[in-house]
Image (cartoon, rainbow, N blue to C red; front, side, top):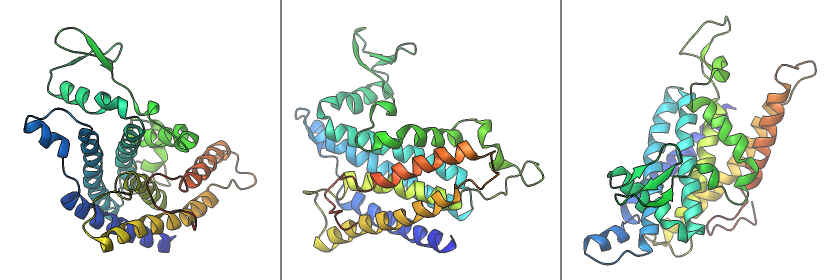
Length: 282
């Protein structure tokens, strides 16, 4: 396990390095710049949303890397949920361009208080009292193979994000006394981080036509995704083995069964085509 943890940490460092570089040379808000010049709204704002989710997630990944150094792995899982939601939203908009207002215009209007939100219905209402949209949740954004693991995975992430007594075991010691020093899910928290960020990286960065700094950088980014997927496949197998229920251990039987099912579907989804990475050899 220690070897896998070290290898995942190295990959996370590589993702941080390449992602920071990409934000600096490739993530330019072309759509917003056009609006500021007085041009009409264009599809370029959709690209801006992709770069926004990627920049936001890269900053979150930096925070996660810091948390891993102090073994606050539960908080890593909490932040990984944010990256996962960013990925779902980004992929959904890429495949449903007509939903542009739901991801760009309406959220900006709500943030600036140009629009109001009806807390009962989730309807977005403009200043003329006209309903212009509905605030949706990530459940509506899942596509492709993400549908096969989404519910169990999102429920698992929410266990840590919300005030849920179901994760009590992470905050008590062997004597059932509360503690902030217990180290939990060192391997799983890193895997979840790699899983969510790699999917977003594939969706935004390793896409045919993306404007890389040079060919060497492009090749390095594509190889990074492949290296991540290969390592994840190994870690998934390792963690699934940890959730095998020993004979006579009935207490965790159903939890372990659910975790194995979730991890199995997550592993399968790694081969789904999201960007332009050739996965035939993975």
